[in-house]
Image (cartoon, rainbow, N blue to C red; front, side, top):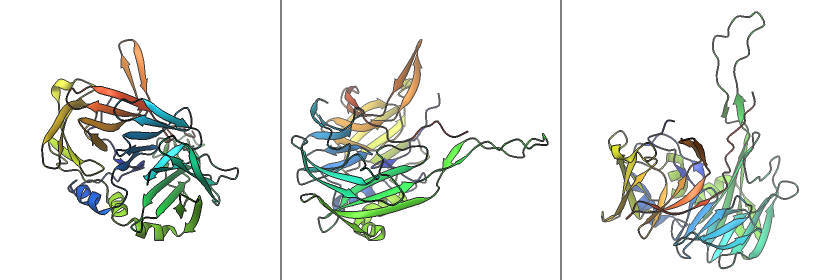
Length: 341
């Protein structure tokens, strides 16, 4: 099994462009300028980390949302009133619920103390469904942010992939000049945005372009990608999503097949928090105390006579001991096959 040197970067579940050429320190500056990159941060699609409450809100594989205590990994509360966390503001969690009967985007405001629903709004969509998981015919992603005027804005993008398969053999029996493996590319897409009143459960439509302008620097960051320092060298650096820490990564010959990298995490002043062996070179992360929080991607590997199938999960690793303190499975909303022949 081949282990990639750099995993694709993701912010809020949206994959970043692969071209990474500048300094990751731009994110540290951005954290001081952009509302929403603060105590509560979206680590991945379906994962919001709330340092103020000491909790992470996860899209549960059992359905609904689990609030997990950062210190222990224990579940604080569960709810089936919503399915995918989007944003935390003023002690309330905005989340995406199951789509309405006509595919409407359902937005639910939850109390972060107990997970009780406080309000609900439905957004009518045209020609698409606000599905929680991708399928072979459509992907749907909703994201939320706090604008400069403190209002909450939700944007959504739906895409219908086009598939390319093997070129069929011609009837005369001659081999085709070229063939291609099955892959998915971008097809038709649609998008929209609403301004949400979380207290009253109202969602007012707005132009997607207007929402982009309100998002400001954060949008520019996603468009250009999270910058990685030292690309092409033996040591690489990445800034945490909240701009408070830096991860330095280098090859670790003693790490074995499954942990071939060595992470060293420092704070902004350069003080070392800790080091640990790691399975990938770089990945978006957050730090709480001496622990690093990151998403472990789905994987399959063979250990002796056993096949170990690992799902998508949030991992809390102690940087002092280099061991995992806890992990919690998260819904994988990406469609991974099968694809049309």
